[in-house]
Length: 335
Image 1 (tube, helix red, strand yellow):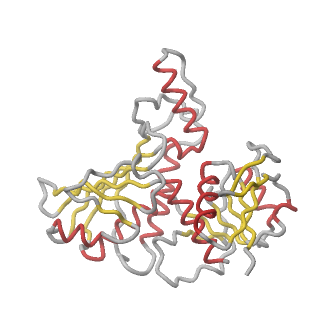
Image 2 (tube, helix red, strand yellow):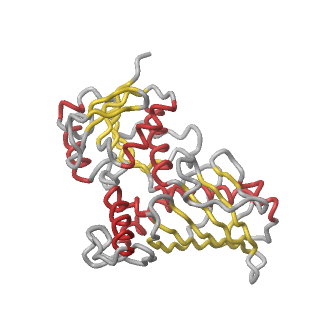
Image 3 (tube, helix red, strand yellow):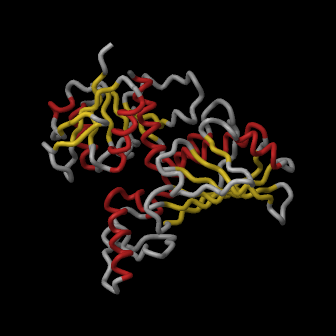
């Protein structure tokens, strides 16, 4: 059977590059058609896997033959692609930019969390859940199966890549400027992020940190409410902090259980293909080591010295890889 055509809008973005890498190495029956957003150059020569490819421009004709349309670029390019795709869309939309999440025909998706056989194929628009929400839903639902949770608190440490290439470049330039005693760029964060933790951005930042926090909270609540294994895990209290790191989410999680947990049982209960458990004999996971890896890693599992029913966990994930893998999984279901 011939490969189905999938249009990738924003093919040079951080997420777009992840999708290209996954499609080229996974054997999925998709042929990617690369499409530039307004910040990218149409006509550029690039590669998908080992094959050369040309990046096309975004217009109605560029989407006509697509079975699936990935939205992985800017919000403006996503809005244009949605307009060209029609209402209802002629192709299935897989949105990694959250531009379509308010549409009535949109469905929040995270195949790594969803129960097998759950039917979502009738949706025209599939919005990929925030990777931090996917990571925490996977973790908390898995805990809930064997060790019911009474309450949980999560500190979420956000990487600069949450803001795309612009965020990564601004952190890099800030770091260089600080070491050189020069003025710092502030277009993305409107605050010093280099060597600093931020509980909020400056007033002139185009995307407030609170917006990320609310999206993670909203998506996590929906994913915890899905039927299947681990259903019933309570919604945790969340606090989002911007960290001076380029890629990868980190989570400090405190969980109080209904009953006093046993460490070995906790570790063995969490271990599945999508969760890498680092026991006491191994180094705890970190965001750098998790780069390019699937799923999540969990380590530093430590009893709370002041509460016998509670434990601390350290969780990391590659935010770009986790979002892209779930997007490709949705496309694979559709084709």
